[in-house]
Length: 323
Image (tube, rainbow, N blue to C red):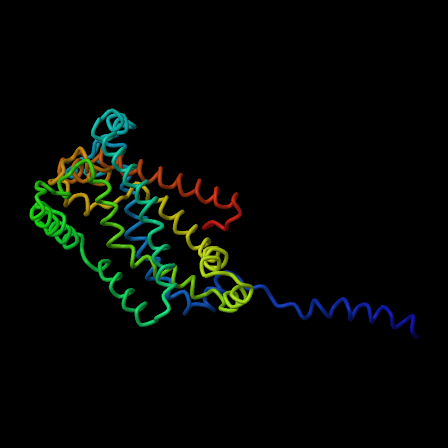
């Protein structure tokens, strides 16, 4: 009886797990099952499709002698002729040099500024003072560049507050807004003043996620406030800072079109011309659509390469990267 029963037991054990397996569902079935979740993705997907991916088809202009009256189909194909003209144009080299200088200065000064401000505000003991300071430093972000430059003109311009004070002390001729030699530093200072407060929001969120028991344990062990910041707070900010740094490197050649366009008449194109303003003047105003598109396409390719390189470098250092 036992020998005869063994095949049946084996059959039952073999058929048991198979009968408990769930049938596989297709991709269409899974999408239909989660259809209400996908509806929240549709608006964002349509936004990027219409305003980001579809306009990329217009990069074909970089390889054409494009005319708006002829359209894409009627404009003759010229291959890489626009890129040849682009690399031989001295204005492009000047714009690229100014762009890289401003971008590097922003990475050195404007990028770490929100981190430093977040650490400084986090060290304040009074929550009331902390909220008041946060409100004050957030406000410039909501001002347009037209207002920001007007405010700086009233303070640092030739007829501004600082110039008036220096005139009273016997020092005349001060005008930081028209000084081409210090213009790039002025641009970075404007970016720090306008965006630094808003950038602290992300780092405040990262600091808020640090468990308090780490600080309490470090304080019990005799760690000073600076040691707690260096060994607890800063390591917690590294993943967020790495992510933002990689994204900023990807847009390193985009240094502020409106900000520089508004100030270019005051300092001249030699000091303020960047790739974005070059594309505007050559393409929109000058009608050289092919050269302007070639410059924009080149900027996008360089940005993509920099993002991939920065992401790979971050992973080699032990970070997570962005993908």
